[in-house]
Image (cartoon, rainbow, N blue to C red; front, side, top):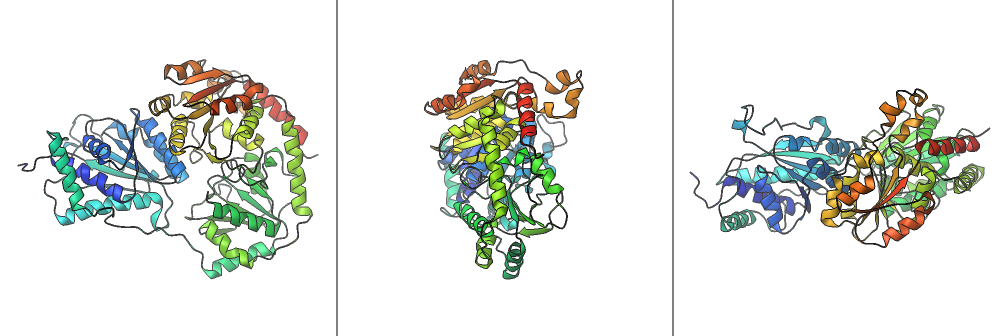
Length: 579
């Protein structure tokens, strides 16, 4: 018989929220539901969390993903049982592929109701399979838990957050905790809820998690540093390639700059590397042809696989005797072409800082000069290029102020940024869902970025299909008045398919690949309470600068022609190709 003034489920919810707060969690994205009532009451009543509401679990998960990617810290997701938990799946896949820390808290029916035909009950154990770093089910709530049971509860919660952050040299990523609750799910009175909160607080340690995981860096031993430095010193024509998700800290940029200068190594920087915008010496013109440039005798690679197919194909076709070196903090393989001959599972900053004293500087010669001359040629051609989607992207990026947080949607927008956006010394933080490279959840992820950006400007560059896939993300922009400025390239369908051989086969190309939606996305935004306006292509930079001066969210809608933009790209490619 229940003898306390509150049900066990209420006490459990309070213990969970209190311990996660002690372990450092600060944000929780909650979707309404009955079985998750103990968690919702605990997180919203704790006082130490910033809680966010989204009725659509799929959108909620991508919102948390964008926020966690920006903060580089775990964000919790709370939902009820059944298909609500399944709605998290696309974002979980992306978080796992892109090493983004998420904590999934899925409420569940108790074991006796499973496999019984009970309403809204599915098998939630191991729901996300191998896409999570770890999964566990919490013990059932107890009215009078033993000290050992409480220690077990706290330890599981602490481990979950630590693993999400990347503890024990595993990559950061999503962690799933399944939480079974029996009814009653809420106390009868406010006083009972306060009593449960007080009991949970008294049982814990003020401000201190039960199990504390010390952060660590994978430091290379001296022999590894010597091997790394020896490889670099042997090279006379080294090249550095920075893919997406390179370390964001200033220490990495400083160490990489020193290394590039000492070696005379050109630096090719993906738009999602966080190096193209913030390092004036970075090169971004590689998309327009590399075959005529002198070949490197070593390639040093950081981050994930580059966005550019041109660059990837070129790297894959380099002679095998040219060593390619990969560096990744957690040992994740980032080479779909299988060209790496040396792989260093070490913290990139630590490895560079340890190796720099052993690097022999050399005078800059013809090797970097050839790459710089090619870069100047490409950027001059792009600056004079006719109107197109790529031209709009170039002007938008050029108009971004220092400190902007920029989210690049998949499919064409990130590729346009890669090909057309000029490197600059302005520090712009770039984000994107390039783990699984889907177009789902784009608006919600960008909203999460904007929520975490603080006072920094926040901009989303997206296409019409990506935006249409995630219109419920507008709910977040309206509810929290997030100052996200959305730059929409609307070519009425899947414009990227113009680059595929199937484009020569019409029909069925127009109906089954371009899939023009024929919807007014400005009207849809307004229906959600977000202001939008049509903008002519020639006014892109001016329109964005004006929008950034206004509060709240805003949609800048550019109507474009995919075929015409592809024609401009092909023409530029021919003009810039080596003969």
